[in-house]
Image 1 (cartoon, one colour):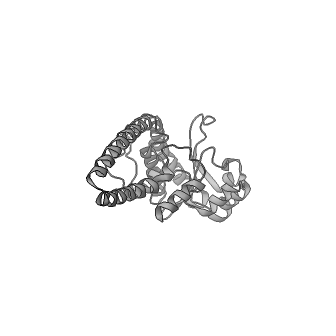
Image 2 (cartoon, rainbow, N blue to C red):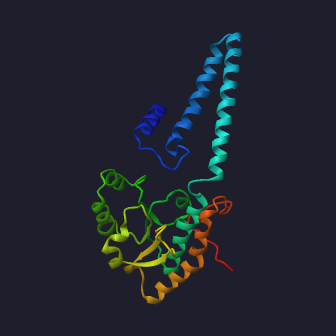
Image 3 (cartoon, rainbow, N blue to C red):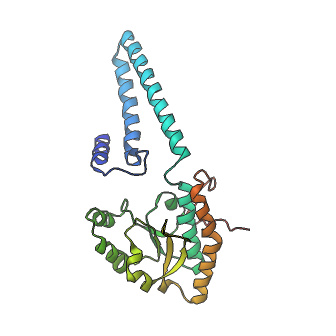
Length: 248
């Protein structure tokens, strides 16, 4: 039943643009388990000749499948969609640093990249992409972009926001400028719109705003260079609440 539910879920989900069939993860795990259990039971019931035929068939299938997996893994490693380490540092640890610089014990963050950031961020993350937030999932599915903006600015009111196309064009809403200070903007961002924002009521004064902007210049700007270095390591372990190392 769990395998059947996983297959059903994968069938009804929209196609995943990131590759490697990440939404099929439960299928790989449960499929491997079921295959082992079924094969073991089948071998127990077979005669010697049947077992020999089954072993030959399994070896042929495993060699072909293994070769395909190795090629796919090498291709993806050479050109991954987005580095988990980049996400962990850029969106998890960097925003931890923003919160620490402003002295915020509790804060929330609205952004689309939850993989590596979920392993490092101490903030409450609101999923801009809708994979882990059912309200956003329904709004995105129904293309209710005005309602998405209302949900962000009137209901969720996150402490921090990360803006980047194609995610809902929040920067077109006047409430972003009204309620938020921009901490960081990628130079020449017409090609890759990217910005970090903090609610004005979370910043006690202009000096605190300047401190967090200085922190972004020191820490976030170098992290953006790693976007094009997908194999860069980000430490042997990832800890919630950790921050990026400061440059010397």
